[in-house]
Image 1 (cartoon, helix red, strand yellow):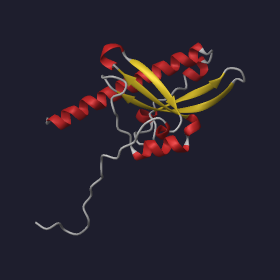
Image 2 (image 1 turned 45 degrees about the vertical axis):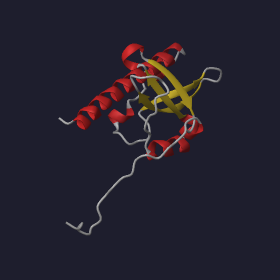
Image 3 (image 1 turned 90 degrees about the vertical axis):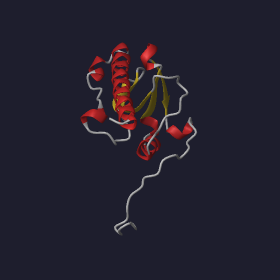
Image 4 (image 1 turned 90 degrees about the horizontal axis):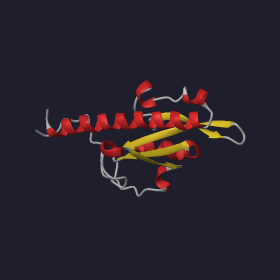
Length: 147
């Protein structure tokens, strides 16, 4: 297995552990707010419905004063380093955060292998991070390349 493949496998595994951490955190928050019924409904969307939805976890926003509840869509970005380490976000994730900004949250899980910590930012991602394009999708045209 090449270095790139190995690194991708490690990153994917770390991402899954971070998503699992956020799911447990959301269940804890909802239970503590007296909504264990909603805690049972927290969904690992990227695993159950597939990656590419624009978010990883579906939870709930709970307004304790009015007993109102709304869906909360959470994108999880995990690192074993510090919280300010840059991360990658897809066009789809960015677009979803804009479209559903009132019900969208970025959960940054950091220092994962030491003592996992988390901070959460609600709203469109572009409101609180600087975005720099770095990747291009390359495809071949139907015409044969010169060989």
